[in-house]
Length: 160
Image 1 (cartoon, rainbow, N blue to C red):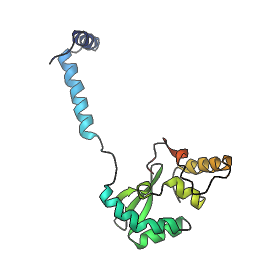
Image 2: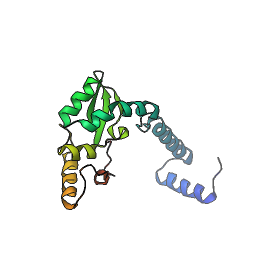
Image 3: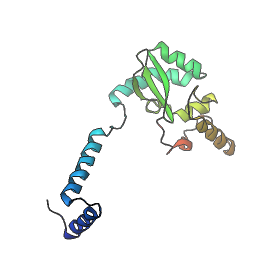
């Protein structure tokens, strides 16, 4: 293995402080990196070839539903349901209940649906998202109910 002298000396010093050989430290580091790479989860992103036809098939139901119960009934009649997923929603097939994609990949983010229905998704653990959206709407003057401002939950680690 080739490395700069400065790196070699710094690594040898760290190994000595840990009372192990430089070779052992390198083996330990490689073992951790290999395990991390093997256990890494790929990003959960649906295949666009699957999502595009679903988007077209479900767009009317997502756009026309009057509330969460109506939306779930419409989706279930076509073999789908929404489930809470992180800070958002995911579409699952019904009745097998396998995750298909995020609601936002269909063009309907959780924040947009909450604004439209004026309530969070039933049983969703992130009630604070609705409170934040409601507070943001109160401070905005003249903002449309369906405005595409999803920034109130951006960066919250959501899986909308």
